[in-house]
Image 1 (cartoon, rainbow, N blue to C red):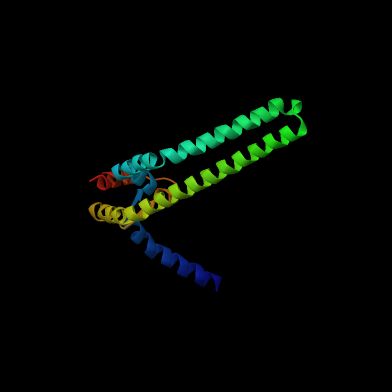
Image 2: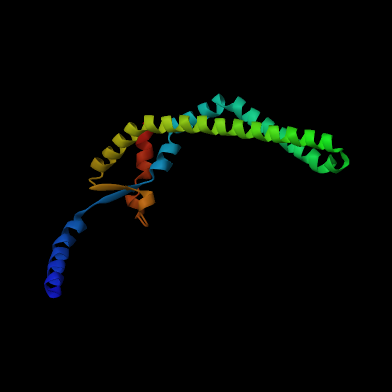
Length: 165
């Protein structure tokens, strides 16, 4: 029985080898192409402008918390207990404020980035399809799924060119 399976397996592999030899595969780094595109650069600049004030408030809260902590470490031993407790309470409030502001900013920025990715998806898909047809490929894989690719089969720069049209 095992000889029969071995013969069948060998026959299947022999028939599959010519088909695999004809398969043309390209590779693209989607993340690199998308985030290097002109649209992504413009989006990044807009994002920085839109959230500059929020980032400044986060930095101010962080700096205020740092100063309170330094004062507490430096002068805490010389303070009476009520002063030390008051300062420690102020520090904890600043840390909470910083964490809240930072989390809110991060969440909002991530939502905007996700919206950008969803908006760009059809354009990226169309550009990848064009690459597939122009290069007469059977398959395009993301670079994360590939161990090695010949430089001529890495189509990331061509994808970037298409995204920048």
